[in-house]
Image (cartoon, rainbow over all chains, first blue to last red; front, side, top):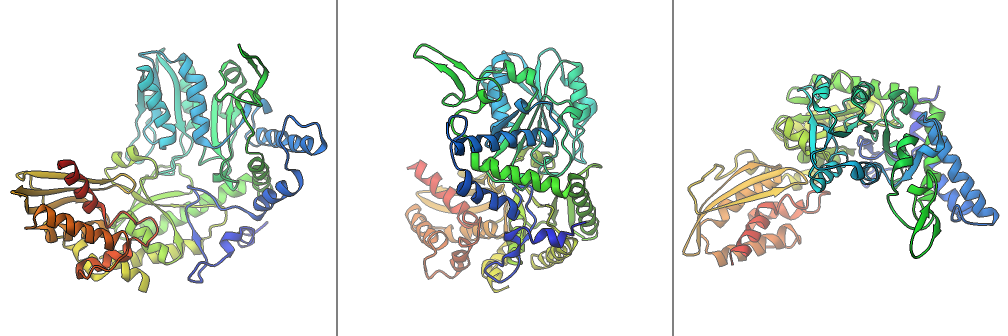
Length: 406
Length: 139
């Protein structure tokens, strides 16, 4: 079994030294993960050996670029256990995936007085698109509440569903609190009312097993850069029956069959959603990221996340003045905390001086902060490369900060 | 620790712990909201203005050590100034906290380094900028 120390060696950025000659302690993987050498090299490799536009060339190089691109689609289909590669749409990230569903699936069926349900712990990216759509269409956004532990109040869901509901949008894991939501149950309840469900899987994919068929969700959105892949890559999974009936999202080249001045006809799935030249190099990098994850084993990665979560939570509970925001029974490797009355930005600036990178602020989840009546938190989030030694060091430094600002 | 102490200078730490003029005062002629949605810092500034002279300054709200200390110093330094004098002091604070220039005002010194810390550019200037925007709208 590969050790975490060996894994760390595969991440060049973690091996380098900062301006003060210290190694970086990177604890902001929920924002974006660091990239293993395999991914970085794949990007270079793509540009040095394969670069050509896809789906249109009649020469060997273009053929290879197209083949590799489509092979990645199949690889991702298998990675998330989807039924068909056509159900995998390449997008720029979770945000675009959500906007695509808002624009192409929900908007045409959403009438005045209809409703969309979101949870109380959504990232702005799975909240603002729905809110704006509802405003445009004079529809209503209903909020599925959470409790003081930061858990969705599942028993309230059925009350919010009716013939007027057109979609439920919920995160698999809360980026601000770390809560793992009971997505399978949510889908099952929503389906009883005939309502499809979109899952924001940005914090789950690549960190825990993702099985869209088992969840039975209708859409699943995630980003490549939060799972060791390049920025600017992302996936929208959608059940074929929905994708088929949806209108295209962007119009242009590559997604059309025939174009005349009067009208155009569009390609079949998945290409009708992929207008223009996609992020081919990014997708090549994403292929390497998925291969990297599969090589380590998603169970191994997932176990490591839980181990760090439990270790760190226990340590934090021992520090006087620390409050963990979000104490759900089921959590991933994300911990939000407040330390006495120290402002999260003062805390993160302090930790930065010791070479520790954490996130401070509202984490693009202002309604969550409002719920807990706090302006922000210091967020620690783990990747496969983090160690318990780093957590010990973090704890020491947080204790120092509490003394410093006392 | 050299680096940190430059930012969290004793002046900033003292004003953060014991801010001056830190109270709500709804009986004044002017109330300004200073809000930075990026970090959640949110203050209200209160003052009277009669015949273009600013008095009775106070502030209340939530913010980091730097923004709180800066607001505290704002209420102290602006007290009794005419609007023109206040704007001129704003210019000197801006030169120091945003442009990193020497101003010769001792209390402004710790804010000179604040703008050099990653992600902390706005902390020092939040209340000052909000005041300037408000006054510009008055004109």
